[in-house]
Length: 327
Image 1 (cartoon, rainbow, N blue to C red):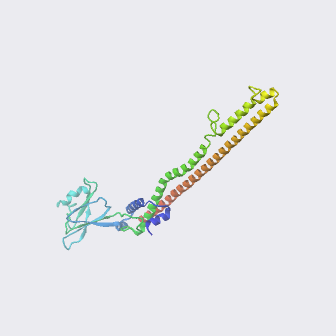
Image 2: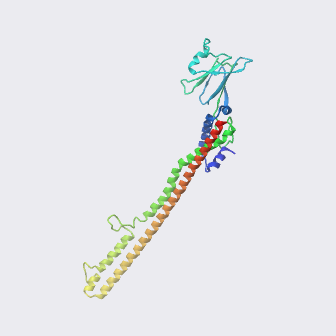
Image 3: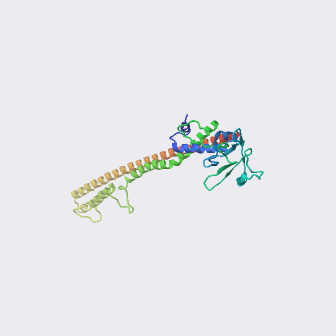
């Protein structure tokens, strides 16, 4: 089973292939650094030195485990090289120095910085095409999580830790990208709330408590007409009920009252329409608020699950490292 399948079995969803490959490489480095020496040797390779080059650039090379050098052009043996402090490297060619001088039967090596960005490993006596040196050092593997289920030059018993490490990192990425999905989901729902409330824009009172355009303005117009035909302030014998009453013109008063009743009915109808629109808008707004709350709760639940699963996988990873160290 490829590593990517194992990862998705732990966390679900769709993984970031490029990021997971990098996290797998990072996991190998972290695990190797924590391995005991006997397991580190299983993560090693050999680089040779001869007459060209006679030193090794350590850029991109892991921990040097040990160095050997052939003791003769023929019939020699790979003799272990002593590591000496870099500050005494110059004495490795001083035949009068009893501590640091390198010979074919007692070769030495040291690691020294230089003007480039990498340290350099030197061996003395200098290597030749016949008397080579062999640098045994850690090599860090690259991993294609979709293409492999094993890692070369890496302990089999540590491979499951790579899966745990990568899965935990992918969970963190899921969490980091959730804010954008939150914004999208919740904004969609809140946009519906705003749209619902906008339906009330032409059906509300303004700051001076006057009617705005819309159904309420129609209510005001009808009530004004009804008041005009009643009109107690300026009674007229020809235009309003009060004037008709004062002049005992019952026919005119009856007509005025009929008109007033019709206008009041018109105001009532428009008021009912305004109430219906308001009720529908508020119902839509409440429904959209409920949708926003539900989406938010779903996202919060998912975010918390990612965090809980991350903690479990990290704890399992750390327990595995402790077990390997004990090995």
